[in-house]
Length: 127
Image (cartoon, rainbow, N blue to C red; front, side):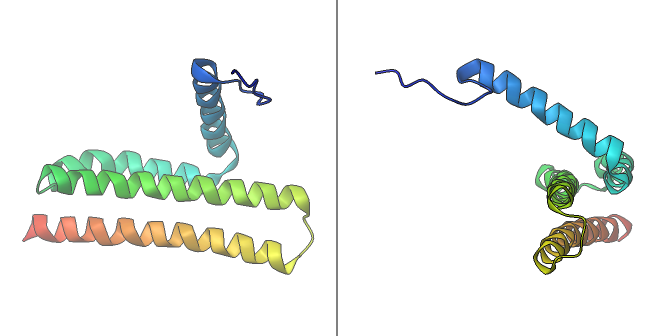
């Protein structure tokens, strides 16, 4: 028995295409409206070629790249959370402030991961 979907993006291949379009709109919005995302993307663009020099193995290279992708992921989630919170209210609210602070903490953790992994890679390379 076929149960129709009430989802706007449809089902099957059509849903995958629509979800991909939404993802690209999200990347565009992050680039246009979030200076932190632009700065971190530039950082990733600079560090990515460096990873080829610093890597000790394929797994080490993967860890370096994944740390950069995780940073971009954290920034996009934080930016989405902030945009949603601002759409609810621009006035100070303790729960909205807490949510924004926790999103920022997530980006901080991702940045710490990048810093630790890349410092270790540079340390090994220079040793």
